[in-house]
Length: 424
Image (tube, rainbow, N blue to C red; front, side, top):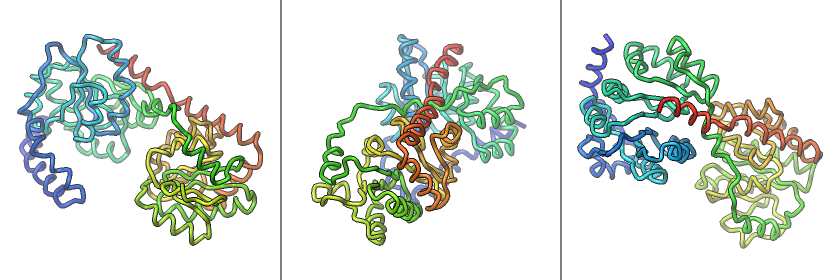
């Protein structure tokens, strides 16, 4: 039954690919297909790499997965200096990001067994490490037939994906039979994999390597300090709302008005997740009668504004550095949250809404350490901020707890390296 379903999948694969291509052509992202012709040789395994020595192969679907392994790659290279390190990705953007880590970067062929077998035969990898969640039936089957050891690293699985794998149990059995070890991101992921596999023999909890990327980096913060001086914000308390979405901003502004009524020296920095929405954010600020220059127009700002609207990317971490308390967005709407731990590296208390499905581990760690707090309304948000800004001791204690929450989740990269070493 397992093999029959795999054969059926291979027979249908070309039609699935054409259907996917059609829907992509009709989507707003169709511009990405401009590179399709130049990618065909790799996608169809016509152009395949060859190595004099068997490489260590990492597969990272796209940019996020590539970034997750960026601290692991140098450690692996140190342990195995003679081994080539190859990365495959499923997207061209992921491929460009991967070139920062190794010169051996290729697009993964389409998931057809003849293509995967050709690729596997040419590469002859010693070990295949799949980051996070992208599993392809023919990739895993070809690896098993070629005797290549397979691991999942930084592995995650949602309830929805678990249900899908259980629904297709015969194919799932075939796929996971060729995976020797799964290094899970979280206890929840570990539990789901245990349900799927019917045991814990192949499982180990290593944590999320993305948490290891949250470190303080030397930055030139002179421009921000110059704005604080120009705006007469030195000595003021700063509340930053970072990575916000339009549906959240009225709640945030209502909360800020309440905070400002209690603590007139408080100032707000509003940083929309998507700078292109800054015009609508600016309109909301005006509706609340709040004076708020844009960062891109800061040279023309007058002294004493209520707020600063951050309308450029790449500045948020530096803004967190200068803030006293931070709200992280995507948590009061249906987005699912952005990384609530980013302010923690600067020992800042973190506030967030109830929708934390994409940042659950960080949010729970913050709440358990009393370095982060969940809020649901403007009043709840203000009522959390006011005591923190009124009491320097309470603020410092919450900031230290926030940093401790981050540190409690770090170390996954070295744990993953230790697991890899047992498989080399």
